Length: 509
Image 1: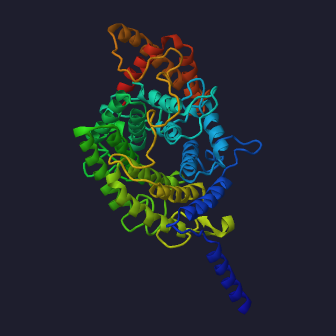
Image 2: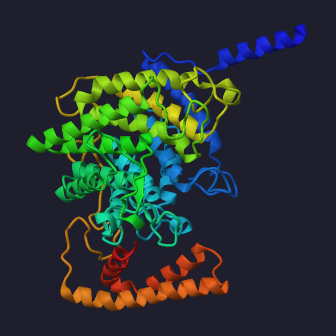
């Protein structure tokens, strides 16, 4: 009995000693702790091993726990780690992983292996990481490879295509891209938030006002449909079958944070009365984000993290980290938010570090729930990403120098303030494509041609469903692949096809 007691004491003592140690007042201590967490995080990555797919965490289910989009978020998290700490250990891995999934020839992060199950948010997360790389001066890819800004533009341009923005519910992006996917009938905040966010960032980086036009339009649509409120609430989404009148009012931190950061970019990009308007919007989102998700100190994912149980799915277990990262960026872009954000993120990070007491990773495995003062038993890549993001983001407030009144020291670069990444106004459109940053008028001739192509395309879809009934296509991927192959044979009708898609989408729901 005495032996058991002594053993228990030794185990507790070891865990207390091995738990992640950090002095949040010391940038060097934060960097050392972040280095350990980054190393622990990459123990979940096996893409460099024989037989594994480079650039992704194990998955998607049932092959592993993680969907494709979360790997795009992983590389963005590690980019921020490099940016704030200067540790280039993982830079080659980040670059090779980001380039492996670009999906040529469009290089818009729609690789063939994932196109059939692609969501706008899935594609968008990879685009966010490419945009981040341009803004923080992450080392540029080789000259013969797609460049960071070009990749971000390609993602945005494909999502700006009228075929993605049908007029069901008055506009907005759907969650899923293929019509055959469950979720195609859902317009959600994260897809539209990423589009808004990318538009604001591309406007600021390039100076192209048309990107800002798309961002404003998306913001207005979110407000009009009720997915966002004047008080700063951001709800999850709504279904097209009822014209988006059934708003699902679950609130997740990354939905709020993606709009908060995007609004801060718009604040930084604009001047005069419009800048004052964006300052008001930033403040409203910040007030609601802090009061809702940080109500007791550490961030809580309230829609799935309840006092009684954690019902968060694997992807939801990573949302806290994105929120920390995007709030830190907000403080750099809109300095009037700095004091509030610094206080909130610091308190949350204290709790995050205290969760890193699990038995894995030499006794410092990080958990998900940050409100208990200890480890909750939930370990994974998302949890490690959260803590890495929390630690790294605090370094944004240790930048030397003052503020210029509009943007903080260390704020994201632009093409005029040191950004070196090269863009392409036609990125994502294909050779000779229409520049999506220009508003194109559709002619009567285009519409007549589109009518014929619409009839043909609808016939193809009907035939595909008929084949499903015969057993030839046992899954939605097979059906969508057949339709996609048929479309591939009509590249010369690309403009008509885009119009036809819009006509089809307008009649959904």
